[in-house]
Length: 95
Image (cartoon, rainbow, N blue to C red; front, side, top):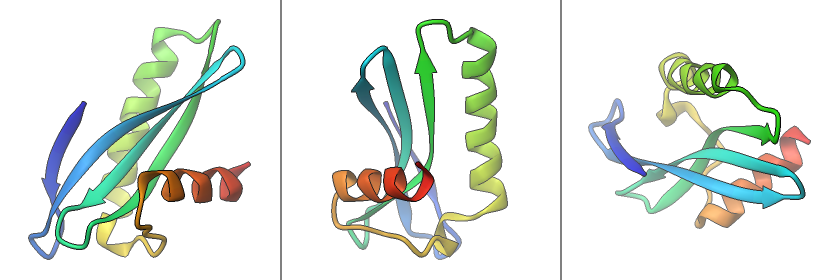
């Protein structure tokens, strides 16, 4: 699923939901794609397990919106040339 937003410089950015499968786990990453610069950054990632609840999923969606509002995409310093590079960097930083 994709959505589009405009940053503070009126540059369009696409919001991508990227999933990574691990044993008995799905990791959902929210990735921004700056259409002008063709660069990617991960907003956040969340792990879902077999016993994850719908409340946890709803909480993650709320957290995503809060992160986008509190930490505008233009202020993110870690932008990459590909989605896989952005996800890999996020995993190394937060694991």
